[in-house]
Image (tube, rainbow, N blue to C red; front, side, top):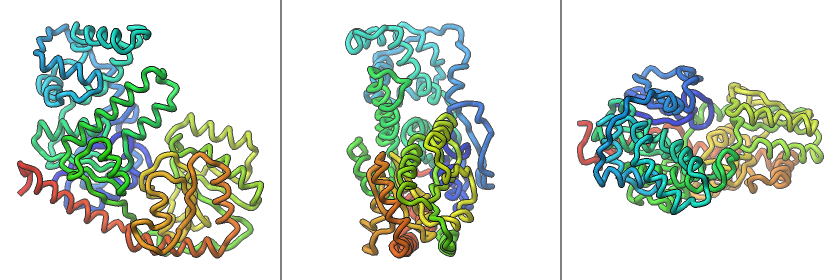
Amino acid sequence: MRICMILEGCYPYVRGGLSSWMHSYILAMPQHEFVLWIIGAESSQKGKYKYVLPANVVQIHEVFLDDALNLPVRKKEKLDFNEREIKAHRDIISCKSPDWDILFEIYNVRKINMHTYLMSENFLDCILDMCRSEYPYISFAELFHTVRSMLLPMFYLMSQEIPEADIYHSTATGYGALLGAMAGSLKHKPFMITEHGIYSREREEELLRASWVPQYFKKMWIAMFYMLARAGYDRAVSVTALYKRANDIQTDLGCDKSKLKVISNGIKIEQFENIPLKKPNQWVDIGAIVRIHPIKDIKTMIYSFFELKARVPNARLHILGDTDDQEYYNECVSLIEQLNLKDIALVGNVDVVKYIEQLDFTILTSISEAQPLSVLESLAAGRPCVTTDVGCCREILEGEGFDRLGNAGVCVLPMHPQAIASAMEFLCTRDNARAQMGQIGKKRMKNHFTHKRMVDDYLDNYKEVFRKWPVSGLN
């Protein structure tokens, strides 16, 4: 089987939970070929991989959104759109539910240059109507360029060559869902989605905090990502999530319940279960296995550790992981300096299996997560965790839906330094509780979160997708 994995902004350019998951996923299926259809932000990333790609990756198709800005404008072509085609464009501009098949036909099959439309009277008329009816107090020029910036990446992606595959599998909704929906439609092959987090909700959170989007346009940008999510949900044969509550959110966003399934993450337990506990010394060592990015809320982690140091002077914090946002990294370094924190280290990318021997427990302060691999790995190594109450972190730590073994850590409110500090203090000062929680986590991982179980579940799901698909791509 040839599986086309559709990836956005992750593997193989950056390290982190989803990238690590993708790499181990491909390695675990040597009997199948993989095509990577990768959406990147900047063409300067081209070919700069942080992973050695497995031998069963047979093709790589890289698409960079900034290349859309450099496309030549062809000699003006005459557009002769019919009413349905005009309506499809008006619907995508207003972020409703456009007829995607019509748009795929125009931009992928007929290869209409997107600039031809964006410079047409049809586009101008639509923006004028929107300006009069929805944005009467906003300048026309500002609305024009905002809508154009939203449409450019979508039209550009719709113009891309579709790689050949037996099945198209996107790891998110958003732009990846757009490519998957188009591939399924034009290649007449099944398309499925695996959401590690709820992509449209994550983009909404980012946009609400973003300073680059004027307040009066945030609603429009958010609506665009929900529109892309609906496009993916409507056209996917199967939509999986990592935990039940995520399935419930997908239902609320319009996904047909009959398509939904939970396939939780799994890790290679054998890599972690025999890691010895740290030899006692004068320090309590806390680890954060996390990429440096605003969504991980490293600043709250730093403030929490500052609070902890007043209570537990012999605590140390090790932050392990790549820098995913250089500006944010610099802000974190400045914060550490301003607070004059001495026992905190930004270690960077390291061998987690080896480094975890130095740790007593771990911490995760994210404002958004799904089912973080770093928490599963920590528990498999017998290290309890302090996490924020995001995604299914509470279920993992407390065993809800899995077992009644007890707590494997402490779950607290996000963006609450005092609560996080108190949770860390509890684990720093109660050696017996820390050891007991570590053993509970270890048992839970071995019973419910093995990598083999996860891979088998996905292979079974591929078979099920082909059984449901009306035109089977395989014998």
